Structures are given as structure tokens and as C-alpha cells.
Length: 309
Image (cartoon, rainbow, N blue to C red; front, top):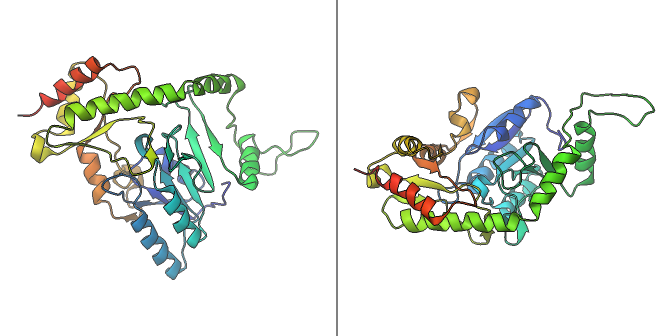
């Protein structure tokens, strides 16, 4: 709403993401239209986005915004996405919910685009048990968002509202918890980097197990280490691996199911789709907590490797 999305507008969204990225579009009565991923980084494909914007510009139906997603704690190609969106004067919204503390070419996640969002949900690198933050250099966006987030109260000596607002404020107590955790964010990121490296040593040396590529210049926060399992080379699939892990009381999850395959968005426009669909069919998000030991990772990898025939 703060960048001007209206009911009936189209918004282009990365398909490979958690549903919240697309739900926000529907909350304002707009229509999410999905874009496929790059094979290596798994982020929104800039080439597909550029082609789609060009075709829409020629047809006179540009979207109201583009939402990119910093997936699993890595950072999408913000500089190129900003350039593409600027060419067509379409605002870029960076969903950096999973990427606090990560960076690309020295620029922190959340600094790309006209506006970005961070999450402080219970499973994130910094948590206040819930909630998040909106960040922008645009004072107009900030003022508009603050107005809407405080129930759209007007500056009057009584409660006066000229539009529908929301109670989206983070409490002072929750904010204090989050600020305290920021002091140890670097240590927790280093712990998760160590965990990913341990997985790479154990599984990466075995044919058929690959990981999300880290593009040049990107420093991820390694929020979730997600492994792609090639069924032809490993003889197993994510459902079998997850069942084996759960039997040992080890929590792991399937990779994100793309939005264009979700029943709630059946029939929504989609550009591409094969890459995101393949990643859904072949990926598992592994235990990634900063306090996992090498022995913990070893046990997890033993269970995974035992799934091979």
C-alpha cells in the first residue's frame, strides 16, 4: 500500500518463496503473478523478469510493483533487479524476511529497492517471537506505512480516521528483545556458516547432493541450509529422507513449494516454472541452528546417506 498498489493491480512475485510474500498482494485486492527462479541461486530470474516487464510495457499493462525474495538467507541480485525495475518505473519491494545480517557486494540485505521487509518470527536469526520491520530510504513510504500501521489515526485532539488502518506496531518490549539479539547476530551467523560447511563436507563429496549456490559478492546469513537431492544419482527422494529423519526425531522440512503450485493461487499467471518446480521436488531444508555440533551434523548426514539403496 505504501508504494501505491491498488485493488485490481498486478504484482510480480518470485514463485519460490513462503506464502507470505504472495499473501500480502492479495490483502490489498491485487493479483500476484509469479516468476521462476534461476537454477543456481534459486532467486527470482532477472532475465525472465526483464522479459516479462518488456512485454507488459509494450502491451500497456505494467505491474504496480515487483517483489523479490532473499531466499534461505542468501541475497537476490538486488542491483540488477533495481536497474530493471527503474527502467520501467516499477517499484521494487525486497522481501528480506530470511536474510537479516546477509549482504551483497557490501550492501546489507534490506537495502535494495524502494522498500524492504524483515521478519522477527520465532524461527528467524533475530526473533521477537513475532512481527518484523519495514525499511526504506523514502520518507514518503515511511510516513505512509507508519500512518497505516498505527490504525490510520489523524493528528486531531480526538480519535479520527479517514481510512482503514492496521495495528501493526511492534511492542516496545518485543523491540527490546530484538535489539538485544542484534548484539550477537554476527556470532550466530558464523555458527550457521560452520554448520553449512559441515554439511557440504559430508554430503557435497557424495554424488547427487548439491547446495544453493552463493553468488560472487554475497555473504549469506545461512538461515537455512537446504540441500538438493538428485534422485537419479542418490536413489532417494526428499519424502524418504524426511521420513528417516523424523523417525530419529530430527526435524527437517521439504523445500518451499512454489506459489504457482499452491491450490490457493491456482490459475495465477506464471512465467516459467520448471526450475522452481524441480527445486520443490528435490530439496530438503536441514537442521541449521547455530548451536549444532559437528557430531550433530554427522548424525544427520548418516541418516540421509543411509537412505541410498
